[in-house]
Amino acid sequence: MNLQNAQDYYGKVLQGSADLLTDACCTAEAPPPEVLAALANVHPEVKARYYGCGLVMPQMIDGCRVLDLGSGSGQDAYLLAQMVGAQGSVTGVDATPEQLAVARDHQAWHAERFGYANVRFVEGDIERLDALGLEPESFDVIVSNCVINLVADKVAVFRAAHRLLKPGGELYFSDVYADRRVPQHLLADPVLHGECLSGALYWGDFDRLAKATGFADPRLVTDRPLAINNAEVAEKLAGISFVSATYRLFKLAALEPQCEDYGQAVVYRGTIPGHPQVFHLDAHHAIEKGRIFPICGNSWAMLAGTRFAPHFDFIGDFSTHFGVFPGCGTGSPFGLRGSQSATASGAPCC
Image 1 (cartoon, rainbow, N blue to C red):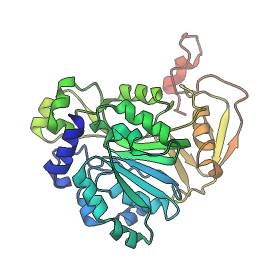
Image 2: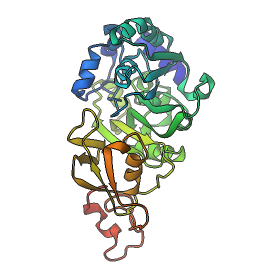
Image 3: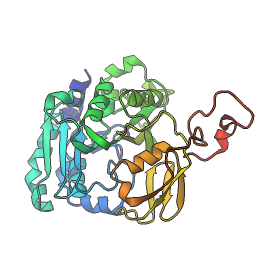
Image 4: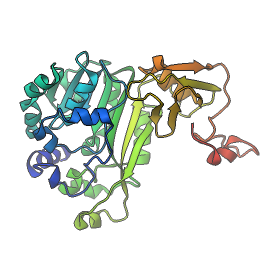
C-alpha cells in the first residue's frame, strides 16, 4: 500500500506544495546564503513540486558523490549538484513517474545554467536499492528529505544506505518522527500517509533501528515541532506529537554504543568553507575556531575518520579510558556515590 499511495499522492493528488494539508512536508529552516544563491538556479517548476521537511545540505561536499533517496522533482538534487561542483555527482532515485518527469525535463536547462552536467535520475523503489545496480561503497554522502517515513520496510533502506556508503561516509537526512508509536491501523489512511504522518517512526524505534543497521551513534542536527492545522487530520492523530528532524549517521567501524571518554579534544582551524568561526557537527557540538574543545571518542571518530579531518587538530588518543563522557549515555548503572550516573543530568552533553 505504502509505495502505491506515495506514487498516487505525490504524482496525482498533489499538484504543488500549496496542496499539502499540514506543514510536515515543508521546510521551515532559513537556508544559509550559499543555498539561497543556489536555489535561484533551480527551475521554477522543480521548486513548485518540492515536498521536503528539512535542509539536507551537509557541510563541505565539494567533489563528493551524492545519492538522493526519494529525489522527487529534483530540487535537492539540483541544489546539491551546485554544492558538489563539476568534479562531484548527484544520483536521484524516485518511484513516482510524474515527479521524475519534472526532474528529467529540466536536466538540460540546469546543465546549461551550472555550466556542467553532473545529475542523473533513476526510477526505483528506495526499499529495493539493490535492484538498481548501484555499486556498494561508492557514495560519499546519502541524503533523503521526508521520504523514509513513506516506505514500509525502513530497515531495508538503512541497510542499503550503509552498504552503499564509503567508509567514513554519512547518511544526512530529514524526516518526520513521533513521540510515540502511531497506531497500525492509521497506516492505511492515504491522507495521513501522504502527509508524512502515519508512517513516522517513534524516535526510540528509529534510534534502535539505526544502530541495528550499522549506524552506531545517530546524531541529531536540527528539529522543530510540526503543526497540524487540518482539523480532520488532527482529530485522527489526537495525543500524538510530531517533529521534523535532521540526523546525520556516519559509517564508521570505530563508533561505540555509548559516548566514551578518552580525554580527547580537538581544535577547529576555521577552514571549512562557509563556516569560518564555528563548525556544527550536530545540535550539541558547536566547535569554535581556535578553542580546545573536549569530545568523546565517537565525536573524535566522526571528525578524524571523515572528510572533516584536515580541518581539525587532534589532541589525545584512545590509550586511556575514563568511562562514559559526562552528560552522555547512561553512565554507571550501579548508583555509586559520586559516579557519573549521579551527576550526568547536570553536565553538558559531549
